[in-house]
Image (cartoon, rainbow, N blue to C red):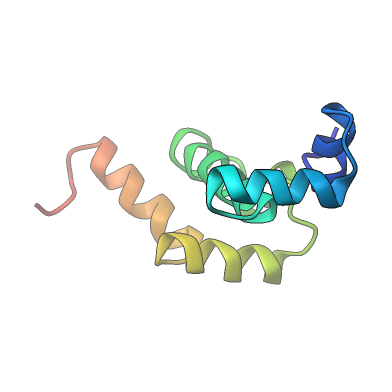
Length: 98
Protein backbone atom coordinates (compact mmCIF):
# COMPACT_ATOMS: atom_id res chain seq x y z
CA UNK A 1 0.00 0.00 0.00
CA UNK A 2 1.32 3.43 -0.93
CA UNK A 3 2.43 5.72 1.87
CA UNK A 4 0.21 8.76 1.51
CA UNK A 5 -1.31 11.34 3.82
CA UNK A 6 -4.73 9.73 3.37
CA UNK A 7 -3.37 6.24 4.08
CA UNK A 8 -1.70 7.45 7.28
CA UNK A 9 -4.82 9.31 8.40
CA UNK A 10 -6.98 6.28 7.70
CA UNK A 11 -4.57 4.04 9.62
CA UNK A 12 -4.78 6.23 12.73
CA UNK A 13 -8.53 6.76 12.21
CA UNK A 14 -8.37 10.55 11.89
CA UNK A 15 -9.66 13.02 9.35
CA UNK A 16 -6.77 13.70 6.91
CA UNK A 17 -6.79 17.48 7.53
CA UNK A 18 -6.78 17.02 11.30
CA UNK A 19 -4.04 14.37 11.08
CA UNK A 20 -1.90 16.70 8.96
CA UNK A 21 -2.32 19.52 11.47
CA UNK A 22 -1.40 17.36 14.46
CA UNK A 23 1.56 15.90 12.61
CA UNK A 24 2.89 19.31 11.64
CA UNK A 25 2.60 20.66 15.19
CA UNK A 26 4.45 17.67 16.64
CA UNK A 27 7.04 17.05 13.92
CA UNK A 28 7.64 20.66 12.81
CA UNK A 29 7.23 19.61 9.17
CA UNK A 30 4.33 18.61 7.02
CA UNK A 31 3.37 14.99 6.63
CA UNK A 32 4.09 15.28 2.92
CA UNK A 33 7.63 16.57 3.63
CA UNK A 34 8.20 13.69 6.03
CA UNK A 35 6.89 11.08 3.57
CA UNK A 36 9.05 12.52 0.79
CA UNK A 37 12.14 12.45 3.04
CA UNK A 38 11.40 8.81 3.91
CA UNK A 39 11.07 7.97 0.20
CA UNK A 40 14.36 9.71 -0.58
CA UNK A 41 16.12 7.81 2.23
CA UNK A 42 14.76 4.56 0.81
CA UNK A 43 15.95 5.55 -2.66
CA UNK A 44 19.43 6.39 -1.33
CA UNK A 45 19.71 2.91 0.18
CA UNK A 46 18.52 1.26 -3.04
CA UNK A 47 20.92 3.31 -5.16
CA UNK A 48 23.78 2.29 -2.87
CA UNK A 49 22.91 -1.36 -2.38
CA UNK A 50 21.27 -2.58 -5.60
CA UNK A 51 21.83 -2.58 -9.33
CA UNK A 52 18.18 -1.76 -10.08
CA UNK A 53 17.67 0.93 -12.68
CA UNK A 54 17.04 4.41 -11.39
CA UNK A 55 13.57 4.37 -12.94
CA UNK A 56 12.72 1.07 -11.17
CA UNK A 57 13.93 2.54 -7.89
CA UNK A 58 11.89 5.70 -8.38
CA UNK A 59 8.74 3.70 -9.10
CA UNK A 60 9.41 1.34 -6.18
CA UNK A 61 9.69 4.34 -3.85
CA UNK A 62 6.33 5.69 -5.00
CA UNK A 63 7.33 8.42 -7.43
CA UNK A 64 4.92 8.52 -10.36
CA UNK A 65 7.10 10.36 -12.86
CA UNK A 66 10.81 10.33 -13.54
CA UNK A 67 10.99 14.12 -13.89
CA UNK A 68 9.40 14.62 -10.47
CA UNK A 69 11.71 12.02 -8.98
CA UNK A 70 14.87 13.58 -10.44
CA UNK A 71 13.98 17.10 -9.29
CA UNK A 72 12.92 15.95 -5.81
CA UNK A 73 15.99 13.76 -5.32
CA UNK A 74 18.33 16.53 -6.46
CA UNK A 75 16.62 19.06 -4.17
CA UNK A 76 16.88 16.79 -1.11
CA UNK A 77 20.33 15.28 -1.72
CA UNK A 78 22.08 18.07 -3.61
CA UNK A 79 23.01 15.95 -6.63
CA UNK A 80 21.23 13.84 -9.23
CA UNK A 81 20.64 10.13 -8.52
CA UNK A 82 23.25 8.93 -11.05
CA UNK A 83 25.95 11.00 -9.34
CA UNK A 84 24.83 9.81 -5.91
CA UNK A 85 25.03 6.17 -7.04
CA UNK A 86 28.49 6.66 -8.53
CA UNK A 87 29.84 8.34 -5.37
CA UNK A 88 28.22 5.70 -3.18
CA UNK A 89 29.84 2.91 -5.17
CA UNK A 90 33.21 4.67 -5.03
CA UNK A 91 32.94 5.03 -1.25
CA UNK A 92 31.98 1.39 -0.89
CA UNK A 93 35.07 0.37 -2.85
CA UNK A 94 37.33 2.84 -1.05
CA UNK A 95 37.81 5.05 -4.10
CA UNK A 96 36.21 8.26 -2.88
CA UNK A 97 38.34 11.31 -2.30
CA UNK A 98 38.61 12.51 1.32
